[in-house]
Structures are given as C-alpha cells and as structure tokens.
Length: 147
Image 1 (cartoon, rainbow, N blue to C red):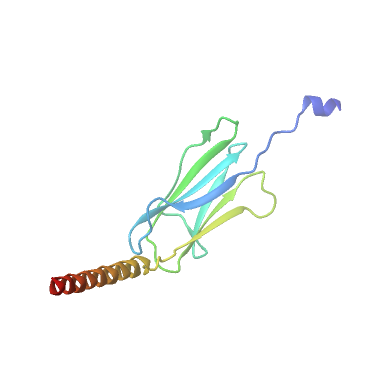
Image 2 (spheres, rainbow, N blue to C red; image 1 turned 90 degrees about the horizontal axis):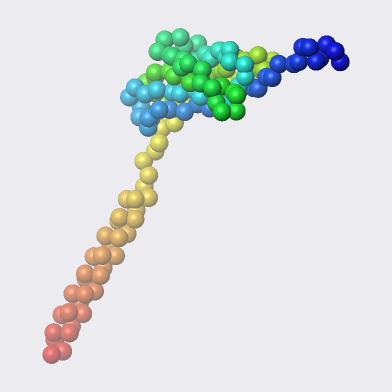
C-alpha cells in the first residue's frame, strides 16, 4: 500500500487511428494520405507507412504532438502518393499502451465506376417529354379539325 501511494501507476491511454485521403482520389494524380492518431497518452508514438507491404520512408511527414482538452494527445502523419489501381497503403502506430502487435490501418485504392443512374433518368425524362409533345400535337391537330 505504501509503495502504491508513493509510486502511482502512470496513466496510459491507447491511440485510435484513422486513415483517409486529403483530396478526392483520381488514378495517376498525386494526392496525400493522412493517418490521424488520437487519444493517446503519454506522447511518444511512432508511425510508419507501407505500400503493398513494402516500407515507405520517402514523402512522409509527422506533425507535432497536439494536446487535447482531455489530457490526451493527437498527431498527424502524411504520405504523398500517386494512386494506382490495386495499391494498398497502411499506417502502423507503435505506442507503449499497445501490447503485442502494433495498431495498423489499411487503405486501398478504389476506382469509382461511373454511375449509370443519372443517364437513365435523363433518358427517361427525355422520352416522356417527347411523348408529351407528340400527344399535345396530336390533340392540337384533332381539335383544329373539329372546328
């Protein structure tokens, strides 16, 4: 008891991690991936990046630690990249609160297929508009013959 009072255990909070692109992703257009690490204490944390399971050390940066109102910290790591179809990126966080495997988040390049919905609705609207014009013309001609 006496030992616990004089040497209290250190508060340790594990980090939460998210990974996302800075801008809308277009293939072969340079972009930036952001790894947001938040809610951890104490501040020493290491962040590493991989591309297709290969360690990446170029074009990455790490922000300064930022203290949050709850006494924990957050930090941002960025990686400049040029997306190609099928690439998989990951951000790995090492912190003293994580026992065993470090915390890893992955992000893969997804190609957005063009949507056919707007084209279908436009086609249907055009068809119905033309049908309305044809029906109006028919009734206009028929009405003129009756007079």
